[in-house]
Amino acid sequence: MLINVAKSQVLDRMRFENPWWVSGQIDPYYGEKPERMYFQQFKTLANEITVQRALVLMGPRRIGKTVMLHHWVQDLINQKVSPRKIVFITIENPIYNNIGLEQLFSNAREASGDADNLDGWYVIFDEIQYLKDWDIHLKSLVESYRNAKFVVSGSAAAALKYKSKESGAGRFSDFMLPPITFYEFINMQGLEHLVEPIKMPWGDNKIPFFDAPDIKQFNKLFIDYINFGGYPEAIFSEAVRNNPQRFIRNDVVDKVLLRDLPSLYGIADVQELNSLFTTIAYNSGQEFSLETLSQQSGSPKNSIKKYLEYLEAAFLIRIIKRIDQSGKRFKRDNFFKIYLTNPSLRSALFSPIEALDELMGAMAETAIFSQWMHRQNFTPYYARWNKGEVDMVGLNRKNLQPYWALEIKWSDKYAKEPFKLKSLLRFCKENNLTQALVTTISYQEVKVADGVEITFIPCSAYSYTVGLNTIMK
Image 1 (cartoon, one colour):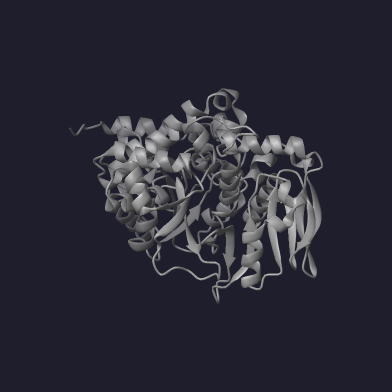
Image 2: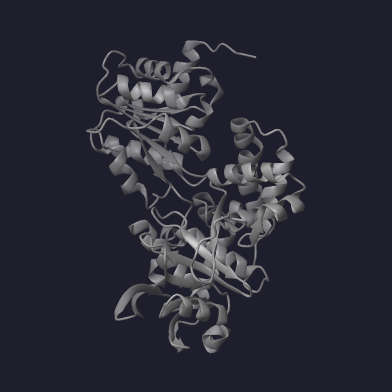
């Protein structure tokens, strides 16, 4: 049923959403939130007005997109942009149902008291995916209002990515905001003093890494990160940390599975999708095939394949492809690994884990993969063959040959007995790799086994280093 909302109500709502029109400041609720480390990169793109492009901010739910947009508003005000020229509209609000972007922009100009001047506007549409054909509306706005900057955000990435690249060709730029990295988790709490930079030997060079002198304390923080650290709000809210199931499951998982994906893609059997995701979340980091997933969930393979595409596009999972012991990719991807993009999702669905839990190894692996997953121009692989496996392999983009290998262990025993790393040593030999990395719980040292120089480093220190490098890159 269509509900006709009075224009006066729309204007009043816009005035409520844009308090800086009167106060010159964003709401303290947003102003007091910590700044994501990606803010400066985002701001550079958002402030670009010489190129006629809208900016599409993408990312999972509850990882700080709306907060970052408000931080940008305050930064614009600090740079002497007129507060009345900055518009924030939450498309998700029912009051804006069936109103096109151009009409919303017109209403916003009227609400702010500057309806006739079309130059110098900064316009934000939050949760844009809830507007049908948003890409067509946005492209039209960009082409019609050459002296305005349009920024949109959304969580349902499948629609956003597809439409921003297809319909918005030449008119949209994308910016991906990932979940919190372990590096951000530490620095947001002002705990960067717990690590110190070191130089790790790597061939003829020494590469920068980080060491945690008090590794027990740092490992405790790493486990906290796995349990709830992927979400900014959970880091600073004791209530959320004490009950991640209620916060993350209800506000992140359920909304995506029960509302976003079904509404966008017409999924009729929501329970089927939920069952599949629950299976994946419980077994994050395990190898799957369409056949095994079909058997476990009771869904046909064609449905499973579509669901996997939707879950990956919604930033809930990442599918990792397999290579063999010679580093060759398979022509048919019959087997693959699936990781949660954020290890905190598993704790929200089931229960938090502790250092000695049997599943700690799989979740440490998930956490490490999550540090890598959001790097542009990098695709991780894993190697598996008869009686052998290597957890992560980097392939050279030019010749598709392995150039580094990583074995992820939540154990110190291999640092004491490196010759037991038979699969890793075999892979290195077959691919002419003279070095490899292996994670541990607490050991940090370099050893040589069967002609391969193995650098052992704690999971927590490795995750911190990769997370930092991801942001720097």
